[in-house]
Image (cartoon, rainbow, N blue to C red):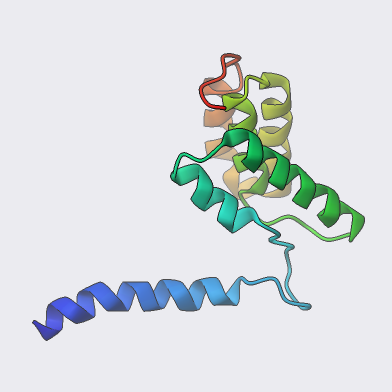
Length: 124
């Protein structure tokens, strides 16, 4: 029983420690804004329009502060644009993610090939 408890709790604790290291603090490399909560909202099927507005607002604030967005930010924004039917913005976001984070190139190329062409909205 103790082994089962440890196997369930240990991964959660490790994840919590890792995420706490990524928080937005004065010395943080990235400005996270509401990115993490918007990913959570996306996974729970919440309004794509509200998520898009929140991330666009975060992006404007991050740019105004002269900071950098975290890895995955533009990719997530691009997926929201695809679902809202704006393929041109999606392509721009996927390309920006690929430029800022070259390690994402294979995945961004996949998204560009498969989702960058889509123009039919799937969610609100």
